[in-house]
Length: 96
Image (cartoon, rainbow, N blue to C red; front, side, top):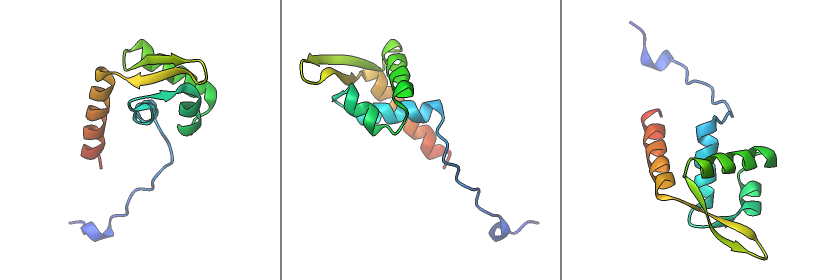
């Protein structure tokens, strides 16, 4: 029988899959954020962030809440986006 103490912890790999990136974007946007700040704060290349924002909007997880002359489009998480985040966090907790 194997001793549980002899098992090594798996190495943590600094890899984010597409769901991690989508969840990070949704968490960052919250109740409102402009695209420029979003792209800077998600720690992903701008082209990739823009592609994910478009995907999240197409899927109905993000929406344009307002358009301001100084900031441009202000994004907001939809109810469907909040539901996605809730389920994502549950799965994350189960896999820890």
